[in-house]
Image (cartoon, rainbow, N blue to C red; front, side, top):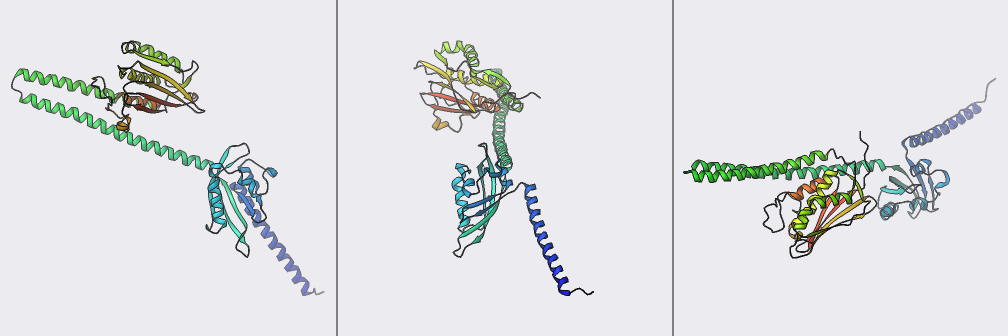
Length: 396
């Protein structure tokens, strides 16, 4: 029996349509799976209806699921970080108005538990009405928090490396300059010695050689101290739990003879429970240098005082060591305050070598701290030491 040709054609046509439909479904499912695997969130914004679709992957980025995120654009918009909001709105409407061909923006968005994540959002208007007003836009969101952290870490490390390179260049210049000066002096004196005619002249030149030798020894000791601090800084052993009030009292007692002789009163106003995890020897060396400087440069025309106090915030502690001594003209010397072999007091003291503040700054930085100086000539000086309230690290 011969089958009607029409029925066969209809049968083949139906199968083709079914296969095509299945193929479309397969492609759609492939895209869904790809988005799931790559953790890419999808949004679909019906602009004029003020409705939005947010995929589960998008909700998962901010630790939400199901109905926890309303299907309207405002639900997402209100989660944008306040500091990023104005730029976020500007970027969105820059694309909607046709000014930007594509929408692409990095910003922070609030998660379920109040923390923020960095996201990269991209999108495009895919439909406009007869008046060219946007009707529908679709796009994606991905979590870039870890990428941002890595970028910030790289930027921070580059800044540290750049700073260390600059310091190393300065330090190398100082070493080269000072050693060349001493060597030049040695050479000149030896040349004079060779030309000297009598024993008394030669004896005088030998005295000059001794002075240069002592100066060179002092320079080498200074440089060795600094190199030692910088090398030990890498170990950064900051596990000691230090009572700050007791440390200051210890320094004050060791300087009692000097403070009494110079009639300087030292006021330790730190709390009895004030503590810090740090390296005791470095920290006490910093305290000693600053307090002894306050005694050394006390104003003889005043009732001299040194006051130690502190301020706190969530992450840091600031220790302020203030005196009412002769002070420094910071407007004149602000860029040289912590440089080597710099003195600013206008005094003719032979014990002022201009190395103390440099070493103090090096030690503070070795403790991951920061040192600042505020001073006015004839009024006094305040050193501000800032340290992180870090917890002790496990010993490996």
